[in-house]
Image (tube, rainbow over all chains, first blue to last red; front, side, top):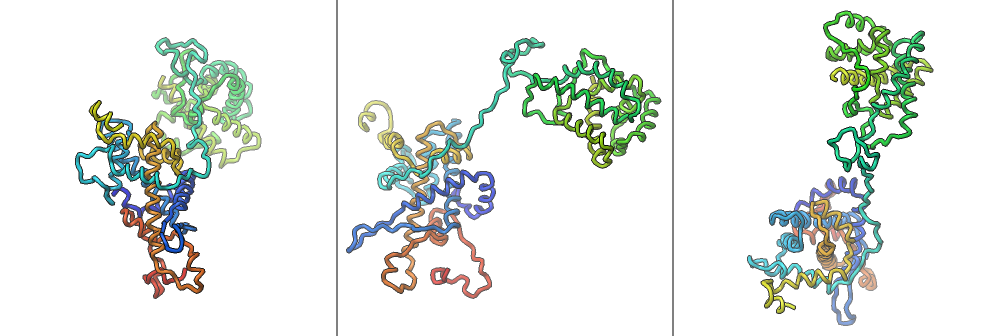
Length: 362
Length: 134
């Protein structure tokens, strides 16, 4: 029997309850209603048909019965689907259901079970059910149910033609859903503005704080631009650089490629790194050489690097990242809280490194 | 209707038993709501756009529950009544669906819901529960 494993029900019930509270409660009410309507009719001499009914339940008994009923329904469904699949169909039909009911009723037996060539339409199981519906009183469920389960309407991404029409790539048909907005366009526009501001700020601040102030300003500008026209798909993970859109480097200046054969840069980087407030020994120790080189770019010579840094900072980041940046801005104002500041900076640094790696690859 | 179909196409004679029932199903509202049954059927992989099939399963389930409940009721009634102080009490015996009756009834259907005894340290463990006051 498929539902012979009733003793595992208690553990399953907890997990069932966790995920299907609503369905479970409804099933419980329905089962209670059915039990309430069950009547044993006894004929006695003095009285006409006297019906003995259940007046109350033990709660645990009701729960067990509900569990069994739920498993019964699931067994019927599973077996019916099995029979449908055996016949090469994807959807079950009435005969599959009848076969499933016969399977589940095989323990008790039903008329005609011995007959191998019986017709399913004539199945005794069905006749029993017909008889039951004739005899039992009809009890509709007491509550009217909302449409269950709720289906939230999914907002489909609009197609290209829906948005705007023209596409840079001709191989993409316009009826496909549009790409999510990429930030690269805005980055290109803000970069040129930012370069001027960078130089003015470099005076009294250390490198990391300067970088952060840079980012903050840039992202503020970016944000104001973003708010106009961005449709951010909700699915885009926040702050995960691996899933971020690749940066476009077609129109802007390609950053200077770092050649590993340049020892001067490395020395500079190693020299600069301890100076940084956000000292990150673990990434230095464990990161591959490529990462250290990137750090060198970040912390390296100030003249040409600044512009590079400004160009590199794109934010491929999402809004969450910008929130990070704003937090750091506030931190910078108050003074460095080393523990929190370190962690946040680490996160930022890692994002930066990964971004720079992307540009290197290109 | 039977004979008409029999003489006409190569259909089985008793097909109408099922088709009639399916036709009449829309008049009968099972106690278990359709949505609930559909939810559990879908959970086990059986998806069907036809409401009548879902009602068929709902009615079959209702029949199952009714059978189990009536068996449990019979067990409950068959149990010897407790000590009756008044004759009036005997007539108004309240029937309660208990775990013991339910487990006996489900036993016949192949479902084992034995309730374990937790009172292991008392000498009355294992004695017929009807005589024990609960």
